[in-house]
Image 1: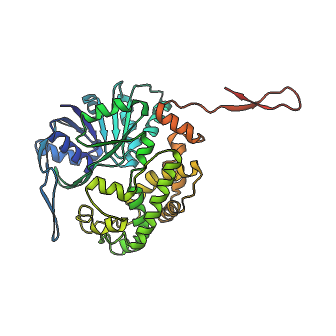
Image 2 (image 1 turned 90 degrees about the horizontal axis):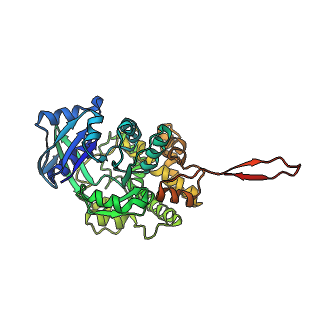
Image 3 (image 1 turned 90 degrees about the vertical axis):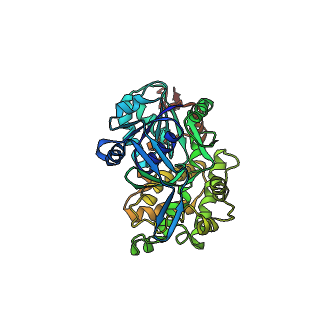
Length: 399
């Protein structure tokens, strides 16, 4: 069995700590002291986390997956202790928290560390840029998943509910030329079926939050606000008309990916059927019939400040927009949802989101970005300078 550190004790962090521990792994669950109330509850419960066998919400009763109890080997509020505990580090936190947590992590990185972010959203590029700027040179292997593999909730102190577990989990590493090593190490820890992609960019194309969350929230915000979130996000929010917008966004996503060179990109419907063992034929049918996503009842956001827009627009949709611009393909549905998100939250997500500039790959061509994803080597752009010879001096390349 393996040792693993999990950074973050939210829904996914506690669920992963329970799941990995139930498989016999030694887990250190870390949370920053300022947000460590959840850790206190687990410690008070003898380091035990329980996964409930069923969850009740009103008249709705949902059967849970992997029910039971598991003891967490170590609970920690000390980032050095957490980083020293294991070579494999899992970071299942919202995208907006990734850079802040990595800032805490950087002083304690060591050669041989493997860091897996869930969801990834090109966090590897962000982390590599932060290390370059800090002058830190460590042999760290970055890995990313397309999303969190669980449909889960914290339902009480030291208690979680797991409503779904993806049967296929998109996974990639940075640099991609270390994929074989990454997969071998990941399989020792992750009790998941890995669907290995060519690089972390391709993994991003399978974060389907970009298709479902911002569009449903933007196109239904009037009802969400008026009803204080008392609304079925999926079966009500993803109406026939909303689903048409989402299908258009999905078509744009696939076209951008194919232009980048990724082959056989699955549609939203194909992927959701694979993940959850469904047989739906359209996005609308998924919204109407998904037993997992509708089971939590009225769970719509109450405002555009919640994560369906404030996280998934800047960190999932904006990178897709950046790739669309890079390959020269128009993507009006994706751009429209970003524009509406901007207006709702008074933020220019086109510049404040996870842009190429923030990833450290601005001004690179598609070929150069893909090469960087493969090798981890960021080649400096060659500059031009004028060499004074005569009145007809011409720019020359300065290596």
